[in-house]
Length: 319
Image (cartoon, rainbow, N blue to C red; front, side):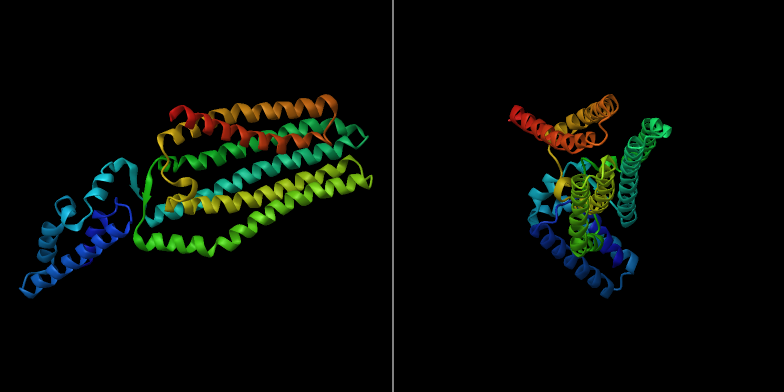
């Protein structure tokens, strides 16, 4: 009997979980189990009964009209758009996104640490102040390595990007329950991250008002490192659950959306390299470490505007 239920699960695995499909799944399971019990009552062995039931009810294409799911079956005919993900693979994806968040957050923290050391040394009149720029470049090199490792983590499941993930019903219900139960923690981590960034900026502004000096800019870096780290952890955990459920940003995207995302990815690399160059030229050329940090929030807002503009242009040209 378990073999029949497992076979039915595989038959319906590529279909959307609409009310009609779920109803048809239940009807077919009941018919299969009733026929199985009838065969057993006739004295047929369990293995032979399973084989006969699968032979009689195992072709979904022949039963689609009677079950009223022909449209759903034809709509899912493109098998390449659906991928079955087991519990083991799903949990591996969740762990993968967690590691990716740690590497990216770690890279950002290293850069913020390098900036902090640079600022502290720049206000020091001793001879070691000239080493600040070199320390910052070393921190950037380390951070780039962490970013690359983090990016490589994402490559393992890159083939899921344009596919609709199909889960076993018990595991799908478990993921949905985990997402609901983690909603409070998700929001709390986002709020805490944003507050840390704001507090870092506020601390710097307040200390400067009291004449503490340029070293107060360090608190901005501390706030950004801690705040963005929390936001990344929360976002990556949620994105893994959304990826498995095919929700949010991970709903199956159209070809136009994929083209827009690809273009944004190509723009991102040169854009952020340009921002790093501008930051270094400004900071070193004018010794503006106490104020040049403002380039990063401005660059983030500008990049969001560029991404929105690209999406708008692509959608307009394709319509």
